[in-house]
Length: 349
Picture 1 (cartoon, helix red, strand yellow):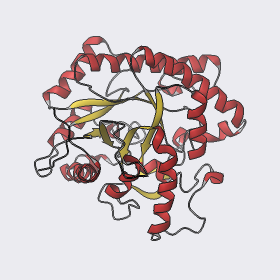
Picture 2 (tube, one colour):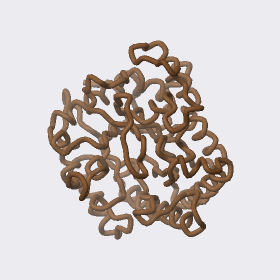
Picture 3 (cartoon, rainbow, N blue to C red):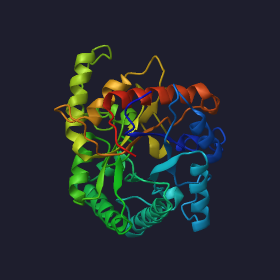
Picture 4 (cartoon, rainbow, N blue to C red):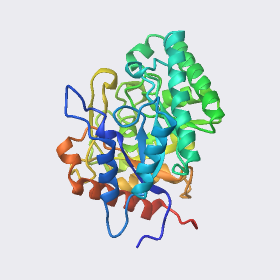
């Protein structure tokens, strides 16, 4: 039996939607994703909740109060809570580029407003005790690079307006550390953008699979941390790189994804050169999941940050055949339990 009960362990629902569709495999319904999450169990320990993508067919960003109540009821019925939400800020989903035209930026903020409304409703229903609303810049690095200074200023302005909207709902926004988003595609660039926003309710969402690629300078070679001739069996150099990265970004981190990466990139369209998530047990995984999670979850003096009350597994782009196997989710849960054993704490409930 595990002594630590925090951070709570969440599964992401969006792997059932991301990368699925007409050109790929069919989406996996939210009901199925909830069932897969609820049914996972390792040594009597189960997932505590799931994080939610506000995107059809899982949840409409324009959901009615009744629809939101139904989602809350789905979670409660399986003894799960809901945590962080993903706002669909991208152009194809009704949003727009954070550094785009006035109209595009207004659409971006509107999507954040809608997401924060749902977040607040779920909180009021008692099913969402903690979590953030995730955003990104909704633009590619090449477009950003046409004028880095002006474009960072525009992104910061849009994020600032979004933060002010989120504050009205009692919410915080977390900028996703994924290398496919302009103004967020390098670790120093990400910090510059966050500093330019200058709002207390914005932070960083660290995903172990995505942030690993910051070390390699994909999409931002001048911010590469690991040497050009780096070999993955050089654990000492990797550890030093992870410490450099996490020391810089940890103070900003308000949401955390446990994940694995094989050191390669994958993607197309707006998700160009993004991190390839691996299964928790993948022998090609480059991360020691419980050890490397600690660089994010502990300060440089070894004390726990306790900046967030739950952590979430992210495994986008898994084939449906893999996702429908109970072993997949038990392996993931087992990895997260190890993270909590090493870097968690206990609170009376």
